[in-house]
Image (cartoon, rainbow, N blue to C red; front, side, top):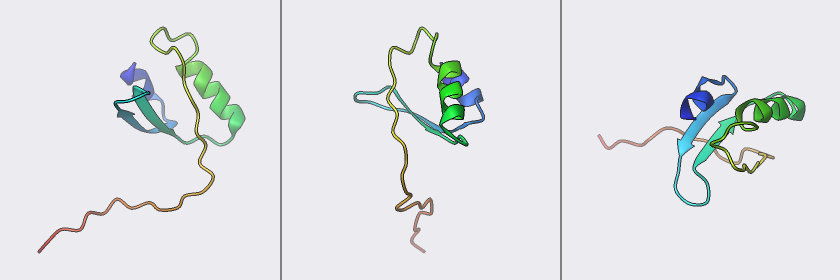
Length: 71
């Protein structure tokens, strides 16, 4: 299953997590029609996926990847 997610160019990030979900995917698609096609391709008919939940980003509030290192 991880391989299918990682092979899709729309999947920007994939995290295996604990809690209510098994995976968190960060996707980049042009519109909801493209999102629907992607979900049908990755999730529908996949016996390892029982359900999925969608959260849509409304606005990026903060994004940093730099880590401050002590000299």
